[in-house]
Amino acid sequence: MLEQSFGNCRWLWNSCLDLMNKTDNDTGQGLSGYDLKKQIPALKKEYEWLGLMYSQCLQQVCLNLGVAFNNFFERRADYPSFKSKH
Image 1: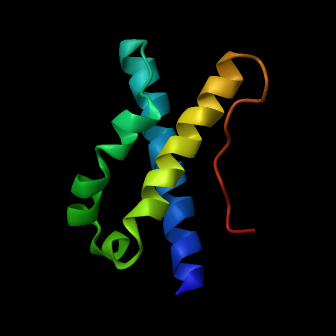
Image 2 (image 1 turned 120 degrees about the vertical axis):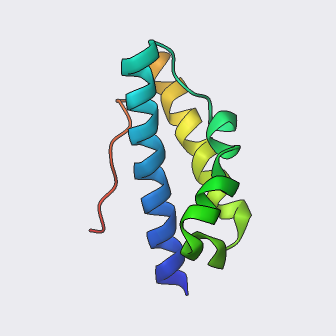
């Protein structure tokens, strides 16, 4: 169950990072962590295996990605990267 939770969080991070990159390229504006958090229910309907874990974990992934982008834009960190299994 723990491995599945880690995998779900990694998948959500990568999916949200990809969505943020596409949105920035298309519109020139990014998304906040809260904007990403609002999309979790729709993702749970599309991917039923996301519903098997606690929603707070998924919400925290979105907020962490928002903080990572804030740190990048304030020049405190590098650009957020995609996560791998290893």
